Amino acid sequence: LWDMKEAVAEIKRTVAKGAKTVSIPSIPLQFGLPSVQDPYWKPLLDAIADEGIPLSIHVTGGARTGTEHMAMDSPIDAFLTKAGMCAMATAAEWLWSPWPRMYKNLKIVMSEGGIGWVPYILERADLVQKNHGPWTRQKWGGKRPSEVFREHFVSCFIQDEFGVKNRDAIGLDIITFENDYPHADITWPNSPEQLWGGEFENGKVGKEVIDAITHKNALRVYNFDPFSKIPQEKCTVGALRVEGKNVDMTPISGGGKPPAEHDHIVTAQDILKLFPQSVAPVKEVLNS
Image (cartoon, rainbow, N blue to C red; front, side, top):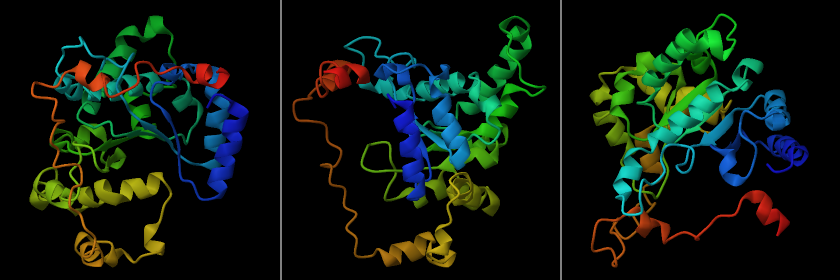
């Protein structure tokens, strides 16, 4: 990302090999790169538009996202509770950037950002345009910011019952389920049970909602057809579990137990000890 010419070449190289998306940091400034408002990013977005692939942004906490540790003795639980603020900060920066209005088919996937915050930020964005638009000089071409969001953004959740209950205020076709392993927020290997009894209300939400959130939206956004390789009837939860019956799914993280030295509430300072004292910006690393 520190060389747009090379970035564009890499996009074209990997898409030719079958890549379905490009990922960049949620806050490039954290890595010594220009902000997402900067024209620096136009060649990358041109290439994405040319190739017809979405931009995936995995949201992370840290400076300029509102998720900063308030103090070194702040419980890490506070940081984890406000993790969604990073998604809000990232979405706001991209929504008010020129790019969604410049590229008609641009899709921005907010990976691991949750969805419960989306109705509020859309309402707020519309109010900002209504109340402040005359002096902030933003031009939306007759559309509301919320409309542009639904046209260009895709949201993802791991567990978010509140968000799914408010799916009509978000837009069903921009909600996707995601999961990974092994961090503590994931629901694998019991994700189907969690979804069914939680977000899907034991099936009360209906097949249309379940299909859209579990696979149809993602397959559309990423232009991906797994059923051309494996028939859909063999991709159900039951069929895949039979297929993988010999796979050992025993958690291997020690059962989620905290390190032995933590006999107290884990704080920001405890976590920061696990990382390097400082992370040099990308350009400093390259120049060293």
